Length: 267
Image 1 (cartoon, rainbow, N blue to C red):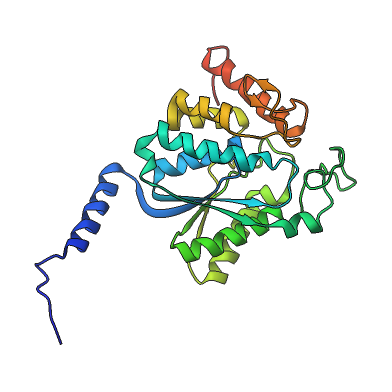
Image 2: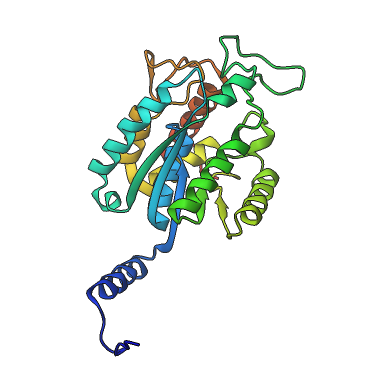
């Protein structure tokens, strides 16, 4: 049996240690993260935060037959521009994955997957709620993370400025984290950095992560509007300006501007 002197390091092990030292010096976690990046404001902010926290970051999105599938195109522009404007993040930003989840659109009858008007349903939830969407997304993300050797799944769900979706709640995320960890026989973390903050605070968080350059990128290259409107440009970005998603984004941006201009103090 061949033995090796423990005091002699191979080039590969030296490189690995050097990379680990760089991560330690930067204050980054050595863990790898998979960010659910739909192309919207919240997921873009989560992606930026992940790049400030984790040594290796990959992204995932889902084509589920959404009416606002323009988000799948704008997210590509966002990723391209992010690499150019933030070169110190580019080296840690890895592969982007887009999965086919059309079955979700086939089994749901919602205003996000059908050409019907947005309104409140008898359940008390808006008919933009796609039952099981986040549950399926997290399951598919966990399966991919398992294969890619990533142990953190980052998602932009919250239960403050939101439409009441039950699959965005903290209890749901904790339950999914437990179920996925047990089912994969691997400890997974479902990281929800926006869970307890409102939309104004989300704008502030983006500014702290990437300055006004990131704010500008979110305004220009993310998409939130449920109707998929990219023809109307507002100070906060593109959208119809009237759907629930546009309303929350616009009000959050208005509040954010008030706070940075000294009209109010951020929470």
